Structure formats: C-alpha cells, structure tokens
Image 1 (tube, one colour):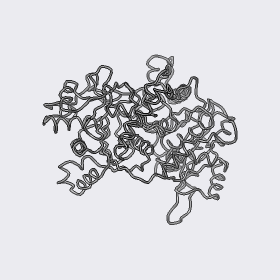
Image 2 (cartoon, rainbow, N blue to C red):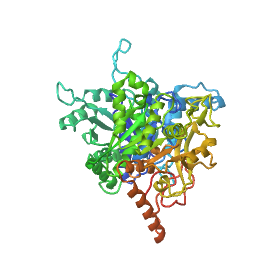
Image 3 (cartoon, one colour):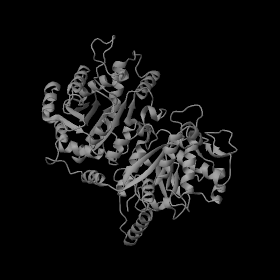
Image 4 (cartoon, helix red, strand yellow):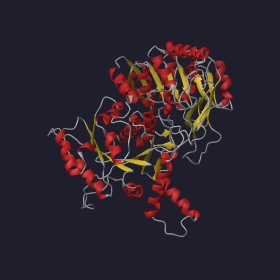
Length: 618
C-alpha cells in the first residue's frame, strides 16, 4: 500500500480537499486504484451535530456516516463510495482507545497520547486503507490522506517567543506526530507528502511572495514532516524565479513544485496537475511504475471542463434556505445543480434567497431585503428548497413552495423542502389552517409531519434515519419514475428524524397530492408529486449526495430540464431509449458499486438505471 498525505499551511480554505481529490484523479488515470481518508482533528465523533455555519454541510455516506464535506469531493471526483471509517476524528480515536482501556486491552499499562493514541491513528489508517471503495475485489493501490487544519503558521504572542505554533490547531498535534511515525513505519518509497501552501501577491508591491510558504515548510519540518511536493496556490501562474526561490529555501526540487492557480472551474485542477506532470513526481517518490510516459487521457475531465467554460445560456435557480450566508452549507446541492446544468447545456446561476427575508415580518423590519428576496424568487426559472433543521425561516420556505405551486414554477423540495411542500398544500388546498410539523409546533391541530417513532429525543448524534435506504416507486408514468428510468425502486441517502404523517396520506391523495415513492413498509413517504404541475417534486431523501459530474442526479436533472424548457424531450428520450433497448435486447450494462461495507456486487439493473441512485443513463 502506498500513501499520499496532503497537508495545508499559511491559511485555511486553500482547497486541500479539491487538491487531494485531483491527485486521486491523476493517479487513477495512471491505472491505479485509489481510496481516500480525511482526518478532522476536532473532538466531535462526527460532523452530525455541527452547525452548517461552523463546518459547512454534513455529507452523508451510504452506511449512515455523517462526515466532513471533503468526503463528498472525494466521492464526486473519484466516483467511489466511502464509509464512516474514512473520516477520522479525534473523538473517534479517543473513544476507541478508551473502549480498549475499559476492556483491559492494554494490560494495566498507563494509557498515554504517545504511544496509544498515535498507534491507534496509524492502525486506523492502515486498516481503512485496505478497504475497496470502487466496487472491485482486493485492496486499493494508493490511499490519499488529507489532514484537516493548517500546519506551521507563525503566531507571535507574549507566551510564544519562538513564533512557531500551529494556528490554534493544538488538537491536531497527535495526528502530526502519528503521521511522522507512520512515514517511518511504512518506509521510504511508500509515503509521499504533498504540502498545499499560499503564494500571495501584495497589491502595494505587486510581486509574488514566498515567505509565507517558507515559514510554513519550516514549521512542518519542525514537527517531523518534510514535504516531497509543494502545491502552491496563487491567483496567477507562478513566475519561474519564484519556483527557483521556493526550491532553494524549502529544499524541494523544482520539478516537484506544482502551481494551482485560480481557474474558471475546479474541473480544471486535475488537468493542471497532469499538465505539470505532478503524477510523475508522486509516482517517483512512491517508487511506482506505470505504463507509458503520460497517464491515460482523462477525456471526460477535459471535455467536461471545456464544455462548462463554453456554456452561455443561463438557467436561474432560486435556492431558498436559512444558511445562505455560507455556500458550503449546501455544497452537495450546488454540485448536483451544476452536474445537471452542464448535462442540459445550461449555465447555472444560483440566486440565494434567505427564507427569513420572504416572511411578512421581514417586510416591516427589513423592507429592502424583503423586496430583494421576492424579486429573486419571482425572477427564477426554478425553485429549490433544501434540507434544514429548526423553525427559523420556515414560513418563508412555505411561501416559496406556495408561489411555485400557484404559478407553475418548477419546484424541488429536499428533505425539509418536501415536508414544507406538504404543509403548504395542507394549509392552502385542504384548508387545514392548523397544519404544521410537530418539529415547529408540538401541539399542531393537524400534524402532517411527525417525529419518527424510532427516533431518540434525548440524544442528537447519529440518531436520525441515516444512510442509504430503498424507495419503491408506485405510480407508473409519474415524472419521478421516468427520470429514474422507470425503475421500480431506487436507493438514496437519508438524514431526517421527522416524516409525513402516514395517517393523513389518504386525505392528501384525495386532494390531489400524489405520494409516488414509499419505503418497504408503504407507510413512510419518500417522494411527492403534483401531477397537474409542470414540475413539482419533493423527496424525503437527499439525491444530491449521489450526484456525480458525469452522472447527475435524476431529480436535479429534472429540475434543470423543467426550468430550461427541456423536460418533455428529456422524459421522452428516456422512454424511447428504454423501449428501444428492450426491443433489441441490448439493455446497457453499467458498472455497479455496492453499498459499503462491501458485500456481493449487485447482479441486475432496473431498466438501465443504477439501483443505488448514482445516476441515470439512457
């Protein structure tokens, strides 16, 4: 097993996750099987209880793991399926060590950070790196590890005379020590360290400055880690003399200094690495041989990046949410919209609409914001209400759903967005003024959304309905069924603790709201549709988590198609291709990835659609 460690210095937010994912792409293009691990030094067991404002979105895995958003980048870039163990946190490590101590595994030893915590980190990495994530048998060839946080920043304070201190990431020190030991454990030729750093330009001087990177590398070396490759972030391409200076003072060969300058879209990053022969530098450090001098051309990446850059015709989607102040809160939703818009050859324009600003109270308190929010909503080609928790901004989301329903504007509601659509329908169409979710009003007279009976009201972490679950599509000919290739069942990822009240479903259906998708019991509602509407769909699951650049989520594809006037051709094309395939007997066979942990791969397809929900192909 070979290991590539990606660290970051100077400042956070440099794009270590995208860099790690892109490294995986170029190594995969060299014919290697790649897996990934993300290390988050925070004390939380997982990201499940974190506010999106604190840490961005919570990415949900097939096995129900609530993980850092970077695991979403890994899955999208590499088209793999990870498990909860691919996200290491301080909380998980300490919990594992304490459990061992309670069992008596340490035989009376004094349990310490070194060696017990550091050994647990190393053992965890070695164990998880061996798990296949691409649906094939046997272990991967390379494991790309991303260490969260920054290393080697300089902070000067009365209590820090040396000036070398990690920028607040004290909790990351055991991981840094463990990784230093790990590089020695696996030996030369099996470990490559890629350090992502910043080369800023001061406006006053107008030249690229190397000192921040020099200090970052010096701090890294002081912690026992030496970079093999420098990945330098900058606004413009690095000048040659800057590379020479970095090589001289950071003790890294010029051929191992890679420049990741700003690009039009992140799909260019793997191509940047390829063009600068980063794969050759990594393979040389890892003592790996590969066929030919150049990796297999990642054609799909080149074509996708070029196609994206050429898109001109816009499609405006209003994103109505409560976390609109931080786009990372909806990162997977944004990526799913992007995948679908590129597939439909439209340039995506996301109009951020804070749901609070749509509410009547906002008209009095912040009239300008209220006016702007409604202008954006009414000017959109489609409306999307994503998931969320809590009652703040709920009324604004209800108003957005009502506007979409009454004005025949394409609407997609995800998780809470589906529940919002149900509440609005109950209030406006069924005239149930007391309709609400018990999440927002425990004493609601018409509780159309209720707490799931198996949920916990005392513990928040990992107590929701999580991970991949099967949805059975009951209504033949509905839009959802057509988008999913007329599949009778699909597997999508969930993250919720409230559900549509099954006792009220017959009343909803008599009023015209169809529940076209249900779970295996038939009592848990998964997909809603308004048949008379152009496109009005709500899903209890999160289809965004399985969207891929070349395999967009069917529901997002439907939203973009409806918003750009292409829905009917899309649905007709899907049906025609499936009919043609069934008549000729040439039903396409697609590569399948089983739900992790890996068991026997799936043996059959449903009408050419990935049953695990990764995408639709016709």
